[in-house]
Length: 469
Image (cartoon, rainbow, N blue to C red):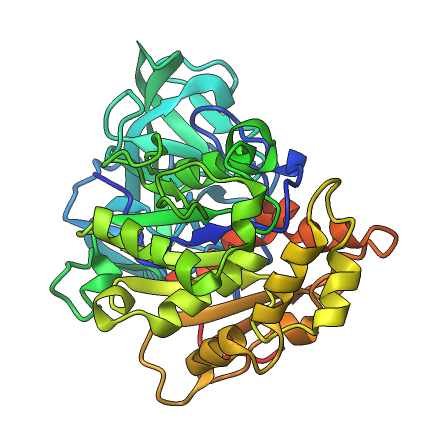
């Protein structure tokens, strides 16, 4: 059974130039990159797992009788503890399940500690690279070394789109039932996690015809990845940060990252080329007329007519994205779930300031006449920021807007990167690189793995309402 996600997957528009994202290096295969430790929820039933649980997986001798299939939800990506007994104790945590994980559950409930508990079971196949000790049928193993990012549990012993049932995280104890099986250069074992969880965070699997909008339950959700000023198509293939970010997105959300224009591509690169979005582009192309550049987004939407998209933009890419949704007709808006901008001059930026700080951003780029032309498009009161301001109006009927700004950024100031409005969610981040302004501007991309998951978690939980910086 496939892990179900219901919240925005984010179209990523990346920054002013090629930035190293060494922090975004991925674990190839079944694990994903590290993020900051998650804080506990309001009660200990969802707090981080203890490092060395003293309990075993043998939680009960009773036969598990499946009565219902449920989904973990509303933990804000902080996780739901699975316990050896229906009680809140520090020594009975055997695992942790995250939003979207599908579990089997028994019908009977038990009251204890102010919670209603149900026995649940997550069963499937997992790659053994992150088990300790070495697995064998009948043994109990613990997940280790995924760096808080998790190990995927699949319905079949192979890496295949659509067969992911859930994820378990470091510290989780599971019983080995069967194996090994060899596939995709991994050894696979069938495992079972069985215990008690508070039902506050379990719900029936939602259907596309339920209370949620059709767009929010679309089975065809995709990212779009765009470069910013002074980037080139070649950056996608030789730079460390863009391939790493794309790999993380594809692994984290179980998506296919294929060649440009492939019908099955779900992590899509944008091109600034005047010849269309499938064409490679150069640094010079990023200084084009923004209304013309934005039309390449229309081509992507038309290429994938059944898909819905969520947009996140770094630097110039964020301005292009917001200009697009602010001017797009309803057929495009309804298929855009959200737009996230990161250190983007969406509120306009003074030409003199932009010229002073942009020069020297990258050797050989930008060329001064080109910078002046782009700066004129982004000046406060000019066409682009004036159009973008539509998304802040009370009658805005398009997607939710999320503006993320680095408060230490000297290239795009906070005042330029921040929007206020009933549809706008704002997140300030402080990454101070005062001695290297380009680094301060670009570090937010490097730090994506640390804060991106929490932001997505809030989006999944439907809590991305208006928030002021």
